Length: 472
Image (cartoon, rainbow, N blue to C red; front, top):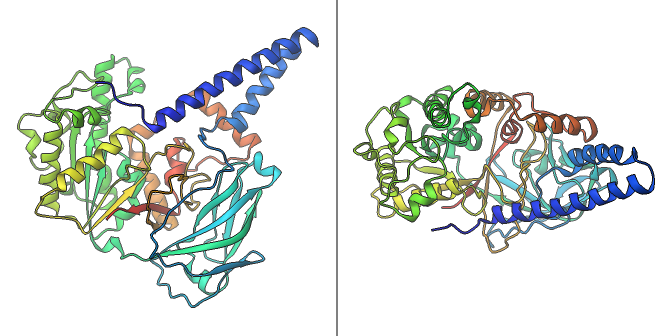
């Protein structure tokens, strides 16, 4: 049975259609200029147009930068009155903060004309170290700054909000989300693929009193890098799956998580939706010519229910998750947020955990969601490695969201970057077209590459904050 297109797929289809129309119009203009003006003008304009496209129009942004983000926080959320005096943020009532709160400031950001060519950002100064948070080029709408970690500067009247290539306008609104320190609890991170736990929550699990890492799939598909070594398609996929299974078990050791608290379930990449649709039917790998999950479970330190037959079924996945939750007894479960992260394996990973918890003797006190991918903006979090993470674009006001931000110092960010560098899937070089695009953007649009690695996730994930959403 065919699956309905996700919102991400629909947006991408519309983007590609619009791009084809733009290319057709551009081609007609080039032909006309060559015929009417001079033959050599067409190739010159073609090269200049391509360079301009790569520098300023190549981002996958599936909404207008002038749209307001539409967040709906719970009515009982603490909402102290603040105002901007010049560029200083002033609190108009007593506010007690202990440093663990998540502070979110809603304010209109309006790009200047240079902000259409260079990424506009807001500089937060007065707290140490200073922070900056970046937005879409041409932004002109309501955005949500993450002030977490700036509480003492805010209360002390030292926090300044300054725009670069943009201005902060209008009446700001502040929300205070108070939460316990989840690092003092037993944490289980659910990773649909090897590296998802590190991308989303390395800072959290590396500091947790006790941490468990559970990876659902081997992530064996798209193994072209290994085919270049001379392997045929299935053998390359099997090698990639074995390497990523190894990564999922070994890299958490860098954060102090012992082998006995890691599990690789070995299900097959992008097959979780099909498993969910037919819970008792095995779903073989798309590329590895495998239908037995035990190939990728060989590094597990203890047996699991799915080891009995190795069948890649939804029912086996639920049995594995129940056994692991009862073994670990996590107080905090961290998993993908199904309304924000559109990856089909991520949506199904969330669904599997929630279904596994139904009627189970052990229940976590907190469920936190994360998003390693977005529907609308492939560059989010925007900006550079080490910057703060502003809230992502959300346009569905019916969603009730409760953000939870964890601060990472520079040493913790570097440890996270090294963990990502150990992941085999983030090591291959980017395609030539992507490297060329980045060079053009660095030269013409002022974008800075990550000092930690070439893969885009080094820029997006190694940040001053890790951002979660409290689901329970």
